[in-house]
Length: 370
Image 1 (cartoon, helix red, strand yellow):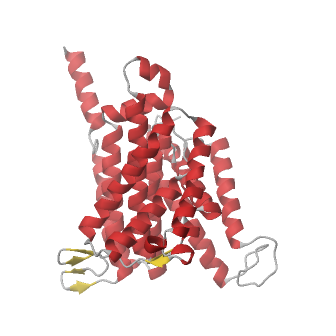
Image 2 (spheres, rainbow, N blue to C red):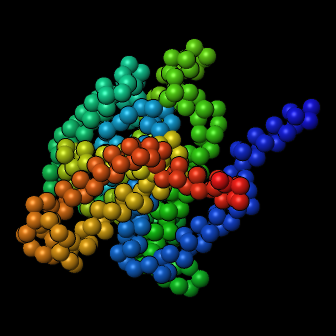
Image 3 (cartoon, rainbow, N blue to C red):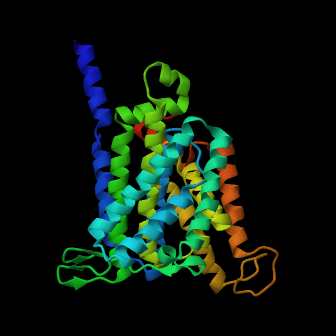
């Protein structure tokens, strides 16, 4: 009886959101950083931070699909583009308030994922990746030709409503102080990241989450013991697509202009690879790894572009140094993503999350760490 009680207590402690005093301190520190960052960061830094948050939200969805369920997808950019255009149409053309159009585009992405998900039942690995790659070219065709919604090849402005009742998330007024667009969006987008991470974390610790991991590890064995492959593979696609559509809607609201080239064809493939790089660098099969990876991979292109405008980067043309060089800034970013993916797969397949977990275990067992 005592042993069973101990196991029950151990399991209950494991599934608690805040399982230790130090974790509670960490959550308080993160909350403080979230509140104070807009007060001390520059406009450019806030913009980069908001883009990192959007990448983190989309990467959490991809990690649920790839990291927890084992389904490889190169079509993530399609769902992000769908969310961005849906935000422009619902929040701009139709004038729906934020509290309606934001959940609506999330549900739209979820529904599209549920429609495409059944293909995962018959395909796996490289075959599934090729099918999802086809979504990028399908999306490019739709985004270029559905001019009444997307604006065609020239793209369109995103003028979505940003109010929740009397509250405008792009121009907050708190305690008599007014905050600009960058500060307000930083708070709002990172709040959604926190909610999205909490939902994902609770999902993977429940019975559906364990079933998804069983499908990833041994799908035939999981089916033998009663796990429905159809339910969990399609469900993973649906949830992942909903996260991606939500990230796309926030991206459109932040950037205020979108074009088909961002989500389809070559650039769409680059965006999808960028998300794959995020979960590889951060840690496949971890929720917090998606956020860690977004800080590295999501911020890198913007920082390199900013640096290139101010100073000469060796061997790069199109920067402040002129035309000397043999690689563009865009190609440099692509090359760095490739190096990161190869490096982490070779030397740290579990990503930054594994490094953090080892450090935590080291200090927890200190001075008996050796």
